[in-house]
Image 1 (cartoon, helix red, strand yellow):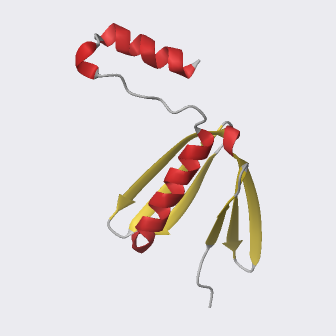
Image 2: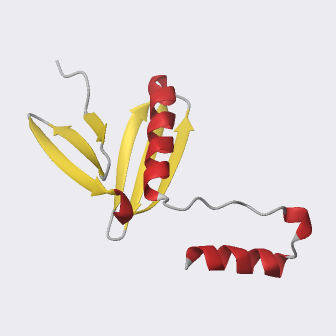
Amino acid sequence: MNLYDYLVSLYRNDLVILQRSGDIVIKQTFHYPDIQYLSYGENLLKGNLHLGLSETIFDLPFNTVSSREMERLAALTRERYCTAPYVVPALEKLSPLSLAASLCSHLR
């Protein structure tokens, strides 16, 4: 009996995911600079962590019993692929145009 379908390892420069497919194991390595976004969601007992890459989206399903570990995984991954954290300026002091300009300058 197989207990897990995925094993995730975080390293300094990349994230390695081992995925069980039948009786074989598929190894996928994702370099942090190649990750364009990460989305995390839960719905009752089913959770998903999506890694958006330039050419594909990797879906990592999980049982929400592991929510705490998966939230930590998401936080650590975000820390490593976001080299310069974006600080949201005080919204009450900005007009919509200056907020858009602030966001655009950060994305360049």
